[in-house]
Image 1 (cartoon, rainbow, N blue to C red):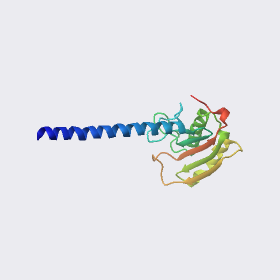
Image 2: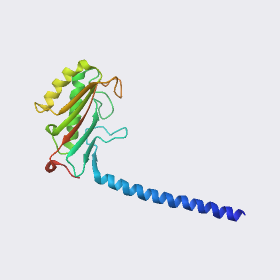
Image 3: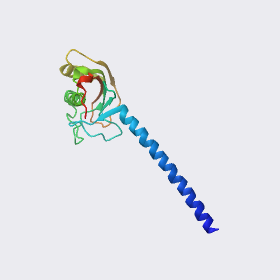
Amino acid sequence: MLAKLSQLSLGVEGQIFARARIIRSAASRYSKELDMAKKTLNPDGMPIPRGSYSQVVIPKPGRLVFIAGNTASDLEGKIVGLGDIRTQARYTLEKIKRGVEAAGGTLQDIVSMTVFTTDARYHPTVNEVRREFLGADFPTSTMVQVVALARPELLIEINAIAVVPESALKDD
């Protein structure tokens, strides 16, 4: 009886291992399909994501570039420009610029930008800084006041979408 239970148990374990191999194989194929659908970048000068996101995503065959929400936190996670919306906006836009440039584009390639601030009274100052960076060729834009950002010292977060000419896209 014990021998039969042992064989039964090995049979069940064998079935479990076989199913696990099938699942791993399918997951591997699915992962390769995802790798072919997009390219992700975490450019120098931008923080390594601490959450589940990439700083820059380029869908293949690639013209759209998606830049994750960025804030005025430096590479060590320290806030740049505590209490100063102008400094935080500049620092954040510099990071957006680095992201689009890492994909081969320029700020003029940005077609959409979303700006989150913790106080609507910051909007005129943010618009001044955006003009410094973008000139007169503005992307579509949404600017909203939010209750809070990821850390209480943060005053602004910006994400962007760019359309980069295929001839300018950087390949690794």
